[in-house]
Length: 205
Image 1: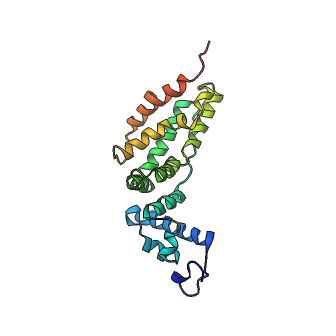
Image 2: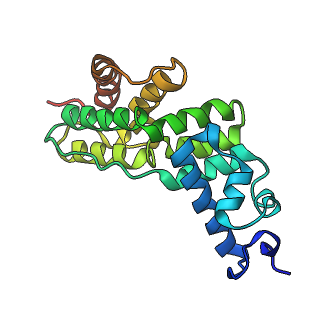
């Protein structure tokens, strides 16, 4: 008997391995998008995927692990604008991130962060995606700034690049705001981010 045969409707092609995992993740992502993490259940995902709960539990030990895996399929990559200078680029990117965190998908992400609590492995998976592949767009912005002579190569590290995103995430996750006011974004950029990356630039003669 194939892995998902017990729960499959009559006439459905029986699946196993990667095909079954893909069906489960697709169903879970659809459930998340429609009902949020609060409405995500193993029963609903199993029914939607045309399988049984045992097939899900063999891959994900609980609802939270499945929710995190499914959420990663919902995220999209942020494309950083090119405004011509570092401050404009960083502020534009932070505003894009703020809109995302304020969106329905952002609400799902906030739910997952709250549910993950101290589960370090799941938190790491969320942090990888919470900035939409967090470091990549920020490193792009810094690479542009480096070409213009605004920062030094030492600033191009993922930890430095994503400082602004981490501070914005804290507004949502720690402070619980539904959206960050624009003056907060400006403060993050002007008072923290720009001094940090510019401090690493070589002194000019």
